[in-house]
Image (cartoon, rainbow, N blue to C red; front, side, top):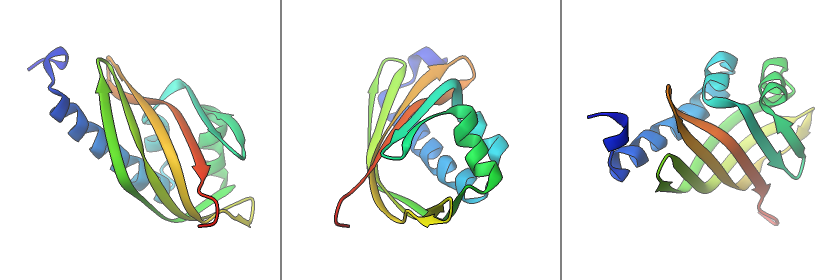
Length: 131
């Protein structure tokens, strides 16, 4: 079966595996694996700012962000042609520049199908107030 004939169920399963891989490489500080999950023009935005791929990966490499635990729940994946959108709640035990940022965040991650597979092109995360 070629890539253009994948069913939505197959794509959803692939994205679920990539979401789990995202967590694994983050927790293991695997910057090469982490970078391989993103397009070159990847953008991450949150209440802490907007970061390109290089800055986001550099934060992990430098230990600027310390991730102790990371779990996604309420994961929902929608597929539109060569785009998949993951939404859910990421619960973190983490610190950024020594400041605790633990807690649940709502996230939206956008994946696109490239010649070498599915890659994340954008991520937005917002902490859930009062949690």
